[in-house]
Length: 141
Image 1 (tube, rainbow, N blue to C red):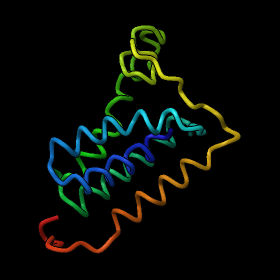
Image 2 (cartoon, one colour; image 1 turned 135 degrees about the vertical axis):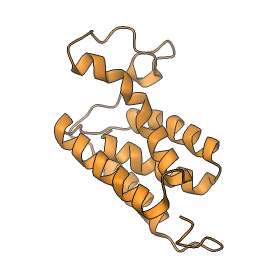
Image 3 (cartoon, rainbow, N blue to C red; image 1 turned 60 degrees about the vertical axis):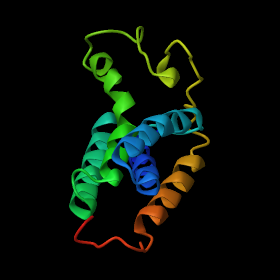
Image 4 (tube, one colour; image 1 turned 30 degrees about the vertical axis):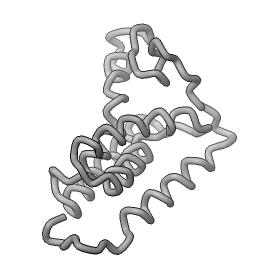
């Protein structure tokens, strides 16, 4: 799944969990769900730009230490282990996260013909993030 959708999903879950540690953990766990669903990857540069823009928007809207931002960071954090491979410093071996080839390997859902799941997840996550909130002031978030 694209980083921007991993971040959206993690952010939405973070907003539902509320607590900062739970938000980050939920974001990390959601990464596996995003990876196993059929999806299309974006070029790294485009995905990096979109994910960075989303993170900046989340920080602006909810605050740096918010569950929404921590959930988003949790959602994208498993992909950090791809950086040495993308930089040409090592191969695919030795990755830890289960959908990246770790010891509890789950099949990654790379399938450019069936990427509707990403759109559904992104729209649902955006709806959760944009919902009216009771008991939370905009100035807090």
